[in-house]
Amino acid sequence: MIRFERVWKRFPERGDALKDLSFELASGEMAFLTGHSGAGKSTLLRLIGLMERPSRGQVLVNRMNLSDLPPRKIPHHRRQLGMIFQDHHLLPNRTVFENVALPLVVAGMTRKEIGKRVRAALDQVGLLRFERALPITLSGGEKQRVGIARAVVARPPVILADEPTGNLDPELSREIFALFERFHDVGVTLLIATHNIDIIERMPYRVMRLHDGRLEADSGGW
Image (cartoon, rainbow, N blue to C red):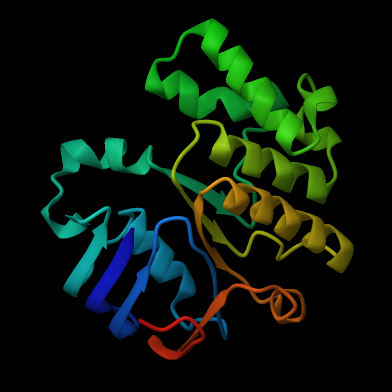
């Protein structure tokens, strides 16, 4: 599903963010990325989402080499990914329903299909009753659930999450990770960057640890 082959990423202003990185994530697998701040976790996820391209090496998703993907095909690639961020990226002047619907509107779905999918996604994360609310009225945990609903509303086969519980307390963090397990149970591939070591060490999933851009440890291996 996702494969890195000797990937390097260099930024002119700060040098190598990723160094000779190789791993493979199977379809339907759930794995965690850990490491210190600046270890390269966000850069790795950005390469999968084609917000960055590698300086050397290959990134493959569904056997497609992303280096060969022309710019006009990038939007289609990104529609195969659900992306979740620490700071939600919600539109403040749009309702919860409208925020979650955005990927479907961009994809050109019918109003009827959008309504059905958005309400199903909100129901999955326990926020159906908030569909008409504005983000400012929600708690931090509720906003993160809206971000998750938006990421899964188009039913992507892959979910990427960058510190999705970074601003949440331990109890809310456990609830968010339980949601991820539910998506994993139905065959979604998940790669989650997190500092929540206490929680993920209690979960039976692969952990990949980055240090200064290198893969220092991998409980799954390949």
